[in-house]
Image (cartoon, rainbow, N blue to C red; front, top):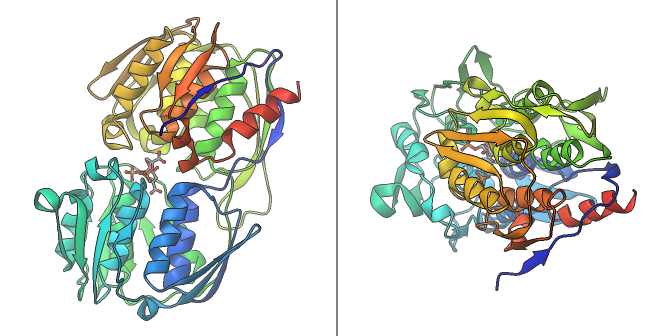
Length: 432
Ligand SMILES: O=C(O)C1=C[C@@H](OP(=O)(O)O)[C@@H](O)[C@H](O)C1
Ligand SMILES: C=C(OP(=O)(O)O)C(=O)O
């Protein structure tokens, strides 16, 4: 059953501080590297969202012991050879990152696995990963000629390749690197634009080697990893909802603590600065593999800008909430080169345009993005998350500034990446 939720409104803005949950991309990778490493890996501030729980469940089925407690996750890695042929199907749930990265990791394992996910995963293209992995020497098949789940993978002896990514995707890059570290010789991936580099950083953190020269990333095969401690920073993609909320709700001042500030993820900061938002960045000194800092955001007067080109991969997941921000900016905001949004959990161009229109936004879809004209007073109404966590959170933040109530259908989708989301809204409203 899908639940609906009538959302509360702040009388005097959002105020106070919160720790947003751990970074989703880094949490997935910590479980994966912990599983293929020798010895124990401790993960602090792990994101207990549904996507990362899917990753834990898959690795348990591959024979890895993973202990979950309130303050840490312990992964008992047994090295590459410790992974066992799963007797059950690996269910990756709603998670594209789990599905695509695990494909790369299983590509070099000498056994058979079957991957399946939910109905959203079943619509997302997997050929972009399967093609290069087949070139490395893996056997992969699946629905529609191997482009969609269910997928079956029979790992094999791999040979390094040189591969130019046709799309700027960290998931495809990471899958190839995870296969490349098991292959004979060197594997080189060339990205058209820079994408998030958490996999590369984690290879180094677990004692491996990877090099970058411009847009080219190289790994040598036959690498073994050593367990370590991973301190997961707060997720800037989750912080983005409260950065925008603070900027658009009158009378707000919010401090978001210990947020990951990796420059391959901070496009939202540049965009908000350009639009005129008041954001103070307070960097921390104890960088443990990833840069972190606090962000203080205040209500701001905003203007529209053009967003496109190589900044897109650094803010791809933030575009739904940037669209809402743009409805509160004077003038026109154009978002282009963002066609990848069509193959996320939903077609996020269609989803955000359709739902924000229901609240009175002046927004139109284009082939590769959207055009938003502001500033518009938004009104209440009934909206739907489309089963997509980022669409659901964007609509919930919109409800903080609408002239009447918003009813959000299927808000549970938000548990994918931010289980404490509504608690955090209540907390920031209560402090006013
Ligand atoms: O590597 C990752 O952790 C991710 C990469 C991005 O996807 P693409 O690689 O498909 O761009 C992003 O949208 C996703 O939320 C997480
Ligand atoms: C696209 C996302 O995740 P994934 O690709 O892992 O499903 C997201 O979190 O916005």
